[in-house]
Length: 475
Image (cartoon, rainbow, N blue to C red):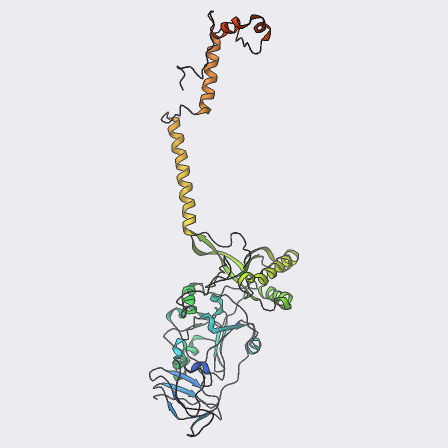
């Protein structure tokens, strides 16, 4: 091994306040069974093997007896007081038959994988496991977050080029807090820094926190695709199948959900942390809602133009509710909580600076209307169909006005033309007018059959001209 650093003691934990905290979950500790291919820690009869050409930092909490230990060419083992390695006894009944146990490749852990971070409102919440639920884009460190790599652990994290755009308020490693780029850059050049942070990228340390009481944007929108790619790297970029018919797509989340999305419009008096506290204490503290995950943050509202989702300049507060149920019950608890939140906003929304609230939901049984944007084909079809329809109407009207398209058997025009022809015929009639034998019975009754024949075959100069059957009638 070219480089081996033995750290005998660790600095105490630094308590950080007034921010959102992001804790890196994976570690490369020797005692972590998930770091070994056998899913167990090597025992005395085993040979512990580290990949020869893979740099790694390993924290060893206790003493381990091993038959053999193969070290990497470049790595470090952090050994606090009382930890180390011993040559194992050949007769250890607790280890059964010894075998080779390989340490997994630590380079698989990416900074942009949202499943590898935990969020909390305080270091104390991180310690007791009171974590926040967030959409994927906001589950990795945001621009105003404090990042913590736990003391008494070792780690290795992959930083790609896109992570250089990631801004942080501060970062703590092995209990040491960095609040500016210069100090952190120097640490990355150290032997430990090179083994813990793999790659050429470097997050930017700003030491600034959100100054807007209504909330600040996370700032990771530009890395959305890379974040989702990192999250879905082990599932061939496929999201788990949602159990409801028409799942919802929260802004900033990689996969669709069964649950509820509430969008809030707000005034300058709105305070994001105050309202988050109300939701947590007034609703999620109730036993019936204890299993629901709630995310609340400020986001850019999305719009769909020919199904290409884009982020607009309008800022809204997005609340996402997921209950984890499946089948016909998927999202049912989240829907009930959503209704309770809307009822609370109806009564107290003005007090919290909320001016408007809209809810979308997707459960195993029902789905809210217009819960997702129309597809490209549907929107294109509607637009093209409308244009063609208007064009056809315009062309038809033009041809009609130019007398190129006159329908001779079209009843509407026949009616008005017939009326004009009847008036012309009437002007040539005798002033006696038209004698209708059916409605003048006084004459018809006395005349008998001869008079009926006279009407049908008149010998006088009077004739009834019927324009409907007039062979000379035209339009």
